[in-house]
Image (cartoon, rainbow, N blue to C red; front, top):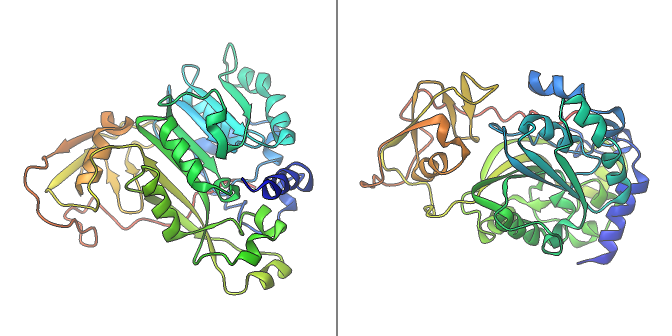
Length: 352
C-alpha cells in the first residue's frame, strides 16, 4: 500500500473538500438526470449527507428488494441510504470508508433515515476500513448479493485487490455494480503523483483495456459496460497538466458466475422479459448491448443466457433454447430481434 497516497486521499476528502462545490472537475459530479423514483428518494436524504456526495454515477441497479448490499468507499453515506430505502426493512446495507470525517457524517444520520423510511431500526452499518484490505474486516466470504462503489476504485492504489475481494465477498450469482473514471490511455507517472489530480479522481483512473484485464483476472470473466459519458475538466491549470488525456465516467456490471465462455458465443438462445422488475415494467437495460422489452423475444449470447438464468434476474425472464448447438460467434451488430436496440450511452448520473 502506498502510504503517502492513502494519507493524501484521506486528507483531500476529509479536510480539503467540504462539499461538491469544491471540486475542480466534473469527474465526481455527473448529470442530475435520474429516474423519477430516485429523485423522490433523494428528497428524503438528509441535507448534510447530500452536500458531502462525490460520486460519478448512479449505483442503484434493479431488483433490490431484500438484498444484502456492500458499498465500497461509501463516504458520507448518500448511496447507502438510497439503497437502504430500496432494499427494504428485510434487506441491509454495509458502508465501508477509510475517511473518519466522512463516516462521522454518515453515522450521525442513521436514526434520521430509519425513521424517514419507516423502519423499526436502522438496516445500515458503517465500517472504517481501507477497501484494498477488506480481508482485515469481519466481512464474510459469499455474504453479499450486491456490491456497489461510486467513483472510489480509481482512488485505490491496488485496484486488483479491491476487485479480488469483491469477487470473494459476493455470493455465487452476485453482482458488482459500480461507477468510476477511465482514461483513454495509461496515466504518466508524473501525473499519478499529483495529489490534486489524484483526489479529483483523474490521476488514479485506469486505462479501459487495463481495467477489463484486471477484472477478468479477478474472476469477473465478462465485464459489462452499461453507460459512459465524457468528463469535463473545468480547472484551467489541471487541463494544462493533463494535455491530450481524455476521461470518461462509466458504469460497469461484473457478475460472479462460473462456466462462462471466453467470448460471446451464439447458441440460438433468446430471452423474454416478463416486465416484473419494479420501476421497469416496459423495458430493462442489462448493458450497452441489451435492452429487453416486455414480452419480446431478444437474441442473446451464451454468457447472457447464463447470466440471466443464474442471478437475481432469473425470476424476471423466460429463457428459450439451450447450448447443445454452437452457431459460431454471437454478433450484436445485426440483432435477430427488433427488441434489441443500440444503447443510449448518456449517463443517468449522480446529483450535485
